[in-house]
Image 1 (tube, rainbow, N blue to C red):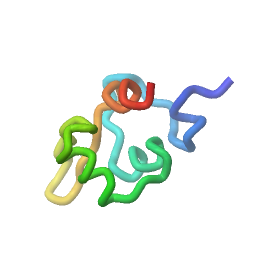
Image 2: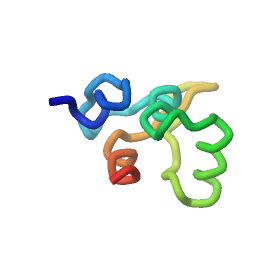
Image 3: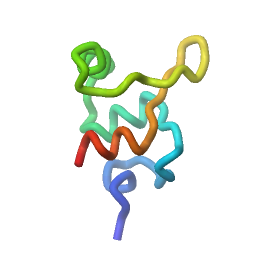
Length: 68
């Protein structure tokens, strides 16, 4: 049986892991980059975590709560 992240084409990750934007977009249904930011600004998605100058990610536990 596949875990929820495997079912979305994303490697299995523990709840405390950080999922990069690309994987988060796939996990949320292949949504666009713009949709992620629009959902964040409107309060639908939690605040992303800054991973570098031009890279952000989301806590896996936050994304799992969102899709549940």
